[in-house]
Image (cartoon, rainbow over all chains, first blue to last red; front, side, top):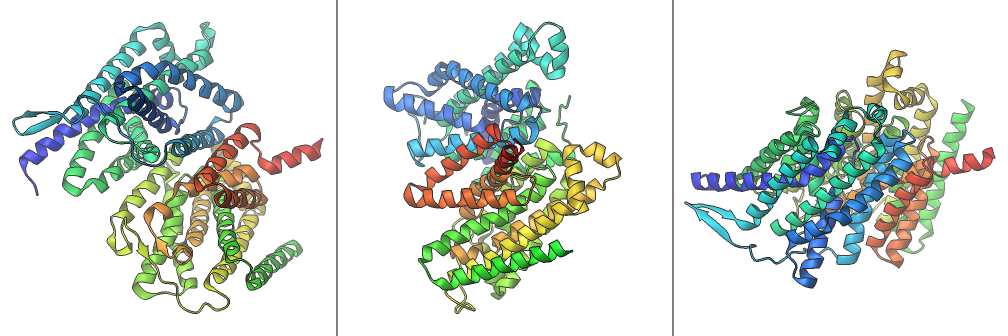
Length: 290
Length: 311
């Protein structure tokens, strides 16, 4: 079974997958890592993004990734609404931990079931010029359907990194994650800043959803596969560190790809959850803990 | 002491009523539906011992339930063990898993604990899917033993579930009224403070996770005989995770009555929706009701009643 060519292919595929996983996890890294909001409904917004890309692709033949970018304002608005409800019902009353968690779990479930009521449980996919093509580099194939999402993911990472480090609102988000009351004393409204950050997080998830459906067909319950991946990456990456998210995503992508190649794809899902369990039990601060 | 006696009498009366209902031989579908609702009484009660009393939200209900079911499948496949043995064994194995996650609470609190239980459920499902002896991902047919002690096999299982539900509720009520329940409530409100006041938090948490796991495994053990075809996607269904927390949340988490009320109401509504509309619609209803309650009536139905009375 083992051959160097197989290993090289698995490694390259894993690296590309890692780039895509970064895109998937940036939103939750912001929401859970920086804002400490345990939004386990995040994967549902990912899948909503996939279905948006699917609908626009079948109806108008629009490119899935272009759709993803065009829909980000809409999902930003959705994120703002969700955070407002969450804040009003839980955070303001100081009941965020237990009931807030249940709220998001219910939300995840509602979105998933709504999608299966509307579109059924068949696999949905998109058409684009680059899907199905690949370049061959001396025996190592690079599929465009993996390469393009990886590049978009890296661009998103860079954009978020620059946004958090260089702009006023980005720095305000970093500040609110460290000390909300202090931010209020400086004359900024932490709730306003958190709303913006939550909206960006949801928008990032929807764009990643468009990438997801270019990589593989999607069904409404695909979101469950990503709960583990998202949280494993966020915890392993050290809760809200953008560089950490990138490194953790690549580690997860490579391990999953190797497991899938050498032990069969049915084990690859257990990898993320296994890593998550080990990371939580052994080092909850992650590789790059604050 | 007299109250405990009264509770035992009520419990026995419920079991007797169950046997009477089982011997009525009405439409068999009613026993099928009744079994599911009673199973949810056990699951919701078990979840509430850890989640409602202790404040640790367990998303991994399917793991414990399915572990009970698959322990039963294993014993049926190897030695064709009788049902009481299956229930005991399923409960014990799940109790061990519960003890394991109890030790996890040493390092993981709040959200992290919940995510870990979710992860546990998926890891366990993957392992079962790759274990061919118990059917792997394709599933496995289970033959019911011929000749139940009385009635048809479904009515027999229905009666067994009545008994299990009574036991589960009695255990929950006992925990709630004893020093264990007060200790758990203390650590739910503030774990550090409870520890400082001399509450043995670790022992209490281990106790709660073990008992909760045991009851969930007990609920799952008769499952193979109920469905007669066990496959991972139905045994590990996310429905159990959602229902297990939706039912106590709707009823009210601080009292043993809450999960029972929630399970009966939501379970019945789901059965009705499955028959009249579609099984997907019933899940949709659960989700909406759960979110509505957690936002608008965080204390559940019991809390609403209390508020009305207070006025």
